[in-house]
Length: 314
Image (tube, rainbow, N blue to C red; front, side):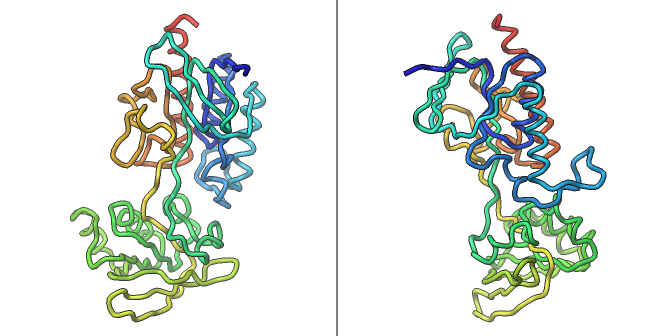
C-alpha cells in the first residue's frame, strides 16, 4: 500500500477550512483539503448570508462556499471529496501524523489543520427538517435580520437560547420562547434579561409538535406537556437553540477537549496539545460560531502551521 506524504492536511471545508487553505497555499505549504461528508459545512444550509464582509448585496450560502473553494484552488489547494475515518497523531514534533481517508487511503502529514466544525442540534421533526432554510434556523444572530418587525419563536432554555431570544426581541415585533421544563437552565442574569423584555412571551412546559407551512414557516403547533393542551401560533421564523455538537468524535482520546467536546487551543493560537496539529472554526469556538470568525481562525491556523514547519526546519 502506497502512503501519500503531505506537508499540510486540512480536514473540513467550511469558512475555516477554505480560508486556511488559501493562506497555506500562498505560503507554499501545498495543502490538501478533504471536504468531509458535508462539503461547505453549515453554510450550505443557509440560503442568504448578509453578514459576511465583502458582499454588500448578500450571497447565497452554497454559492459563497463554492467561491471560497475556487479561491483556494486558484492558489493551488488540492481539494478532494472524502472523509477522515481514523487519525493517529504523533506525540513528538519529529514524527509524522497518520490519517486514513474513507477507511482505505493512508496519508502521512507533517501538519494537520482540523476544521470539522460543529453541527446544530435540531428537534428532529420531519416538518422542521424540510423547512431548514425556509424559516427554520439554528442561528438567530445569522438569520434574525430577515425577520425584522415580524413574529418569531425560539426553542431552548439555556444561556444561548436566552441570549438569542433577547437579540431577536430587539428586532422582531414578538418573540415566543418555548421552554420544555417548568424553569430555564439559563443563568439568573440571562433569565432576568429575558423577563425584562415586554415582547418576549415565555411559555414553560411547552414542546413543538409540528412546524407549520409548506415552503416557508407559517406557524407552530405546540403542546403543554403538563396539561396536554395544544395550540397553534402564527410566526414567520423559528429558531432552534438547544445546542451544538462539535464534530470531534474522531479525535477523542488524542486531543484535549472540554466536557462538551470542543477542542481546546492554546491561548490566542490555534495550537492543540499535539505538536503540528491545529484547530480552527466552530470545532474550537463555542462562543461566536460565525462564518467570519471561523474564517479568521482558519487564517490563524495556516499561519501557525507555517511557523511550526519553519521551526522544525521544513
